Length: 403
Ligand SMILES: [Zn+2]
Image 1: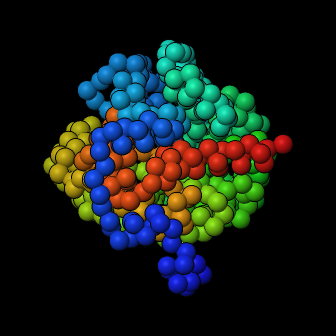
Image 2 (image 1 turned 180 degrees about the horizontal axis):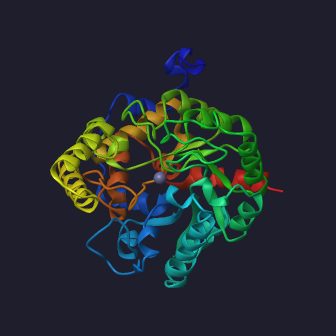
Image 3 (image 1 turned 90 degrees about the vertical axis):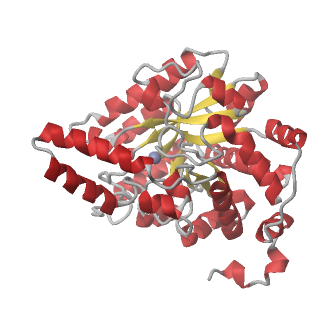
């Protein structure tokens, strides 16, 4: 157990955590939900619709597929979005990662903000987020996902910052030359290498937030030590509730909270619900391996096998257990219990995950979360912190530390 829990609990529990721990529920009126939701500045720190806009999707019109478009962002009362400049690990070979990052940054600046300048505004600072809000615009921010994007060059890192990148996820599912990933069984760097520490310090100096989602546990602890600004997880949840390497252990969450960092809850079913994690082809390697063997046995030739595997995978995923809105609330409760109300936020991973919770199907559904939080006993001030207050505080700390 950690120090704080040895103190008699009644002494340290705030009203909010008492309400949550006793699972006290009440009814919130539509008017109250609406009032609290509208007064909150909802900042979602991870959205992957960019993987579609880079291929030509217009984020403007309502669409039937996916989780994100402008119509639904407005319905959901979303105030700011960190769009992911996601660089797949496949770009790591042959120095193509920085090229891909540039394309992804451009889709945020050109396809999202440039195409809809009265609806979106590129924000580069915490004040910039507030300024966009004042104009009735959604603040668009840029976060690089996959540290291999910098191709081991602090010069490229500085260029990305100059283009508006305000956080970088140190790894994706691949380890790079200086940081190990949670998705890599081999840990070539034993956490963060010496150069990795230089990357983190340069991010601190620039005022770019350090994102430890996707990093290995050892990388996380090394970052906690190396970074002069609290790091954060832009889209991770609690491993004690859904046991996947991408989620954070209770000990990690407690340690992060003590440093003033944040866990931004990921809404992917596998991140929220143990049964989802166990029945998912993505999160359960045994299922994936079984399907691969079936495809190899039943089809001849590489192309036919790949097609069959795709079909089997989508059939299996259609049957996976869904998470629910209540699961998302449980993860918020867990972080609050472990590390306090100042340690949690939202990083939905919409359009980056295949399965989304019942009740939180897309970006338009955030008011339902507001209702659930209020009915669970969270105060309007708590909701404001979870939805964006905490993130603004962290961003300001990063800005202040920058020279
Ligand atoms: Zn991710």
